Image (cartoon, rainbow, N blue to C red; front, side, top):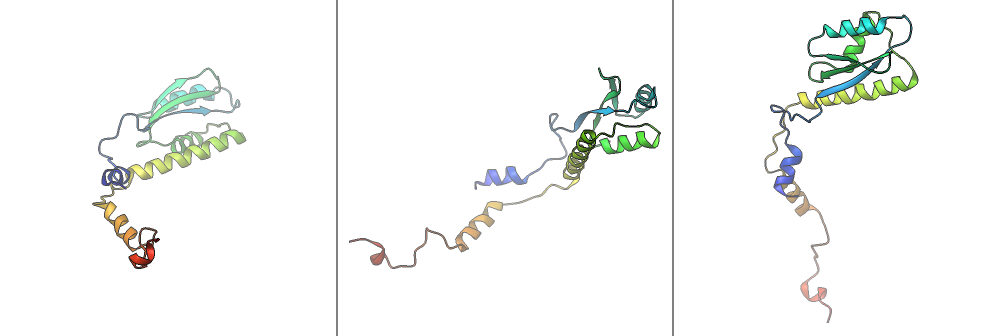
Length: 149
């Protein structure tokens, strides 16, 4: 492995996140049909949260939200809605989608908050390990026994 490759694989820069790094999330919130009027109330409720953009979708029981994963998570937003008395869609499909999104956002937040690893000359560790490993490039037989005559 080349030194540049090891540095690229090991190095992380958190102080200057790239615009397309996936920090801004766009999600869909689906609500139950009962009680009626909760989508409009949820739209007003979510509009009060700083850093959360709310938009109406074609589905009358859904809202679109945009937020930064550094400030919010889908789990925290849905927990706030549930505590405020809103009823979210709880079908099996939505449970699976939520579980996947919760896991991905939690992992992304953990990775963004972890400190940068500083590996200097990490390729030397691989070179030393390779030298200690018995492999096909080394033969203990004397040269006269290795040559075919």
